[in-house]
Length: 376
Image (cartoon, rainbow, N blue to C red):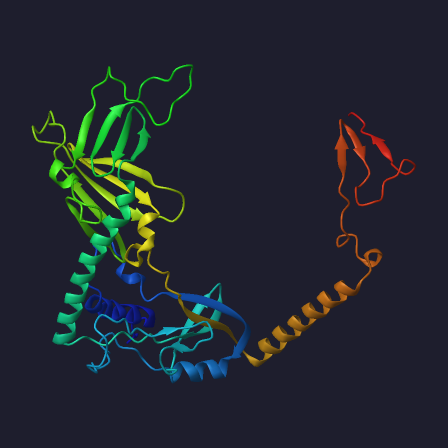
């Protein structure tokens, strides 16, 4: 009976661990993306006999294998063991690795797969502490995020998309309007509203909320997350009445950390009838770690070596030795000793149909050779 792929079992074990540790989850998350692995093919090879011995004695990994909870871990701490570039584990002693055979382009390889230990499950007390700490962090980050955006007070951002233009005036309103036709074929910025075309308010802040002091949480603001990416959201109503639904227009504004450039509207879309979604990119939120993009996880290395018989290995290393010798001889050769194919071809330059001699040669008034191109 064929045993299930070791990579699949490793990934499934990590999925179970992550689902118990991380509170934020999104249906858009790629559950099979962790732990991450990167296959690297080494230049050295391994004897067939040694490879078979390692494959036969390789430890098996079960998807149900879980370490026992010690009860001493910090709530919410990710104890997953990662393998560094040298093959050593970060934060733990070196564990055994398992082996898998790989066929690629008619060649057989022995691949060493690091065993990534999942985080131990949390007990009831740890789960409760983790949940309380997360709720406290959400409140703090929401208040701090809105405080960072308070410097936008009195400013407006603009976005043009086809016929419509949009303005986001912080802590005031979001408008949709048609830009006034340019004069002398020159567009003005910011876009000016055309009074001859109807405009619409997509959402606005109530007068009471607009009077709040700096640093207080804005109206309809909350912290949301997609996977490990956190962003600030403000939901506003009170827009112009929709002709189709007979209800007020409303909009959700998402503020994302983006350290590149200045404050700007990334895009806006009508997600349903008279309901809109706007994304604002701002470097201001990057001043709080809660809104920084998730750090890219370093992949665990799967190291593969080609499996060879003693005869194949002897030929392989003999060929490698010849290659190194040829490279060394090529470096020692003088330019005139190089073969025609190895010699550097001179750069041919032309000027108005006239071909000049290569620029590699020193040019003087006496030795410039001009060759007139013959017309066929």
